Amino acid sequence: MSEFLHMGGYAAYVWSSYGIALVVLLANLFAPILAHRKLLTQLARRHQRARRMKR
Image 1 (cartoon, rainbow, N blue to C red):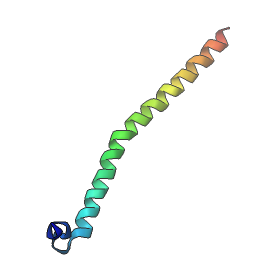
Image 2: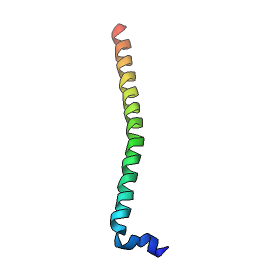
Image 3: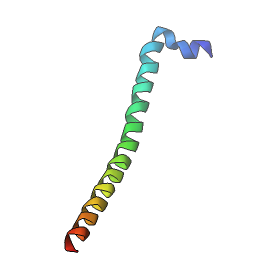
C-alpha cells in the first residue's frame, strides 16, 4: 500500500492532480446551484418592487 501511495516517486504530482480535479468538479457542481439561488433571489426582489410600485 505504501508503494501505491508513493507512486514511484511521483506522488506529489499525482495526488495534487487528483486534488485539483476534485476541486474543479466540486466547483462545477456548486457554482450553478449558487447562481440559481442568486437569480431566484434577484427575481423575487424585482417582483416585490414591481408589486409595491403598482399600489
